[in-house]
Length: 155
Image (spheres, rainbow, N blue to C red):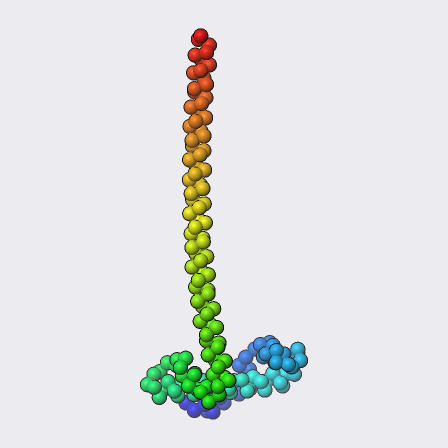
């Protein structure tokens, strides 16, 4: 479908939250509470930009004979603007790095949790053995003391 025909579908509706758009505007130098008209216009501009890039990427995928859009299609859509292309590539690289670090942390945490669980089990086993040994020795000692006393009394 043509981008312009589809864009009319959301006319008058906000596609992004007012709070998110306000924070983006504030981060780029606007006042903390921007005018509602400013937020509305920014929403329309951002929506139009994202739709045009998505349609351009979809065209590249369709030209390649695919129905699904890949990362390379967005790179192709941004080929004429090296600043946007660099930011998209940087974002994807950071995303991959964050995912890799999360995987490392999860495996480290799971390995650490396994080690802690094994240590707790070992301590519980050792504590159980030491109690059993103390009880066994304690009873044996009592019996031995009783026999010693009995032997001592007999003498």
